Image 1: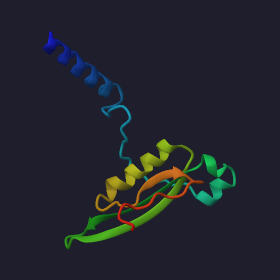
Image 2: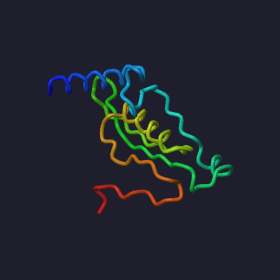
Image 3: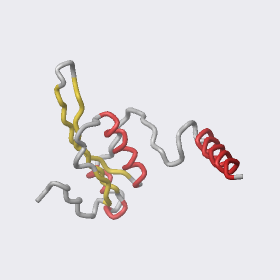
Image 4: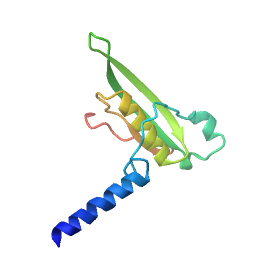
Length: 117
């Protein structure tokens, strides 16, 4: 009986994943695109309390000499999900030391970095 329950649970999970194109529900798909909206332009049309601000700083290995390239970017979004997906895109390309990435409503204070005194 217990083995039957486990098998059914596994079947339900596999069916749920297959129904969404091989991606688990709620997972982000890497597209390689990094569209971040212009905050100043968007704030003219949308109140800051409804805009999501995203910030990313990270590094990636470049070339055969293992040079680390650093990138810092920001962008604005109309939903938190768009902002989180944008962060996922950057984290997928700049896999090292992403230490200051976050999504917040644009009228909120940015979070403190964990290592900041």
